[in-house]
Amino acid sequence: MTREKRIGILGGTFDPIHLGHLDAAQKAIEACALDEIVILPARQPPHRSTQPLASIHHRLAMAVSVSQSHNNFSTSTIESDSPTPSFTSLTLRRIEELGHCRQNIFFITGIDAFLEIKTWHNYPAVIDQSHFIVISRNGQSVLSLRKTFPDLVQRMRKPLETPPTDCSPLSIWLVDGPTRSISSSEIRRKLKIGETIEGLVPSTVESYITNYNLYKD
Image (tube, rainbow, N blue to C red):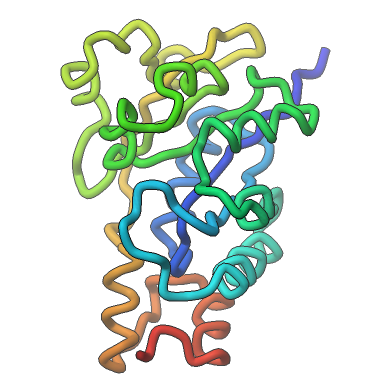
């Protein structure tokens, strides 16, 4: 009997999308045996006080260039088409309405973002809308979340110890592993002063940025 298709949701501002994002996606694929990664660029990120520098048109196009060059990756316009802030709870509801069972939806996030989970729209209900995969970042172990959120410990699992199955309860999967320490803000800074971003973004993204002269102002 074949199992249901598992999709990983990789949301973000992607201003621009970079290799650190792809590292996180790859770690999630390996840890939870995901079948597809869906990249979701946000038009209006709810937790940012400033607007993205690149338009949603450019950020979406860069994400599409990445998904077209990676097997089993796709880019969705669910958030980029929305005029309202891209709240995770609303996005997950829309994905479920498209016919995906929440047991097979895995929302991918970094530890830095997950540390703010209790400030997210519709918390705590949002953590009952999908699985969550939390990826370590900048050497910060995700296992520290067990002390930070003692009330969520029963949901937290390490996929290497307890691999997810179709019958797994909705869980918070803790994934430690090396990912490149790259930030979109550092990429924008380098571009503004004329430094190279080779090795920080996929080649398709670097070409797109060059072709449209992005992040120079």
